[in-house]
Length: 314
Image 1 (cartoon, rainbow, N blue to C red):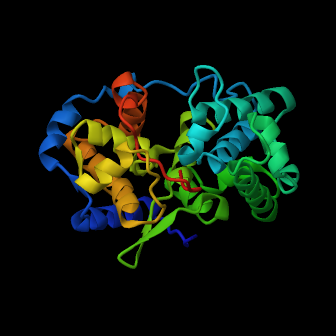
Image 2: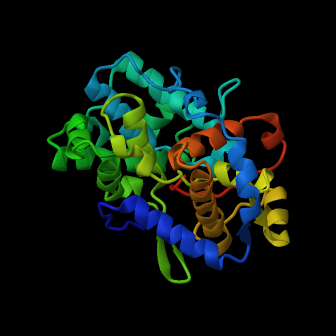
Image 3: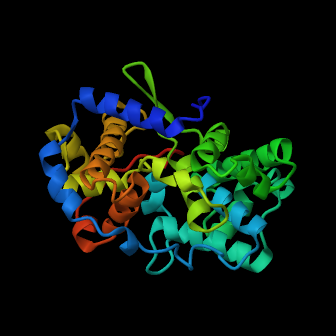
């Protein structure tokens, strides 16, 4: 489901997520745990830099813009990670990112016209998977949409997509959120709940990689996926009811768009907003998201099953 974004896309996301958090039944934000969690967050300078193994930082600006947009266009599939062929020592996401990185380093960036003709077998070869894996046609469809939009609206240049944002991460997220490749809106109690995880993350990546300078990147929300809610649950910030907790720990997939799945994502976004406020502005929601995402790679968090949902949002 796509939605028409506005210039205040992050405000729409945070307002909708706060609304869900107030009404959630299966997930609760433990506000009493916010201060302690905030105290345990790293300093802004300790959050790390873009992974050189997952970003072709040596490319020209057009190639780096193409990489940030294309990788985030297929930055979904966490519900399928247990079924893909992972590279030794790499997670599902890093396996996919490594394949795209090698493609850019070895053959250069995809041209938009090339993307409009990409099929499951083509992207499967890039990321080292079988063409019959369910993610491959979904990846291909997303990349075809990217190619079509860059050609039709931005004269076939990824740089032009970035430049159309006029120095605003919020504006770039809004541009991308209008593309089908970045669609990410759920319904909860018949109200649309926008998340736009990948559209916002792409804008943040463009800023972090130095492709453009976005002073308002701190205005973005957390990038709602399955890992950040998991970390917040393990750390006691999110409390799940018994049925949802048992389902997750039994490895049962959560149907995308169901109330518990929407509540997990929305309550995580809202909790990160509370954490940002508790730091007194020392850390922004995207910075806290990065800290929690990195924390989730530790053995303590990997030892406990995380929520899985098969969808194209995250």
